[in-house]
Image (cartoon, one colour):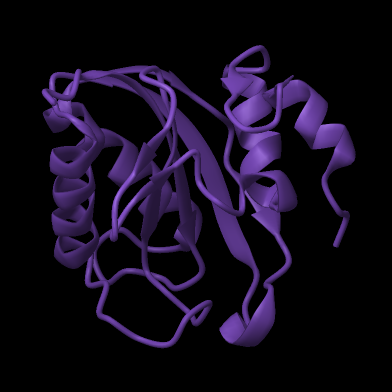
Amino acid sequence: MKLQPGRYAIALGSNRPHGRHGAPEAVLRAAMTELRALGTVERCSLVHRTAALGPAGRSFANAAVILRTELDPPALLAALKRIERRFGRRPGRRWGPRVLDLDIILWSGGRFASRRLNIPHEELARRPFVLRPLAEIAPDWPVPRTARAVRHLVHRAPHY
């Protein structure tokens, strides 16, 4: 089966400063610029500050972008992981501190599942720190498996 390129909702997060870019908010703005090399960034949310979950310790800066690209989901995931590494991301414990986290949240092609990638993101409905920025730029995007749009999920998400 040939996968189709399309539009993607990408979640961005950071809770560690970067030597060149500075504070987490600036890291996200720099990452948004890097995403332009992969296609057309159609929309960018504001950067939100959110409390840390789990062992991350520090609060996070979170944002979302809508990216149109010719890359299919596995190729986009590989490109996002390369960007994370360029920003200094190293494998570590889950939910730990990180300079940059880029996640594919939604895809115009609907669902996608592989060993390394699931679209929609499995935790989307339980992550207000992803849903709030996403609702700014794509409130009516339907979320597969939920029969709801992003704006509906925001109101149902847990509040931390």
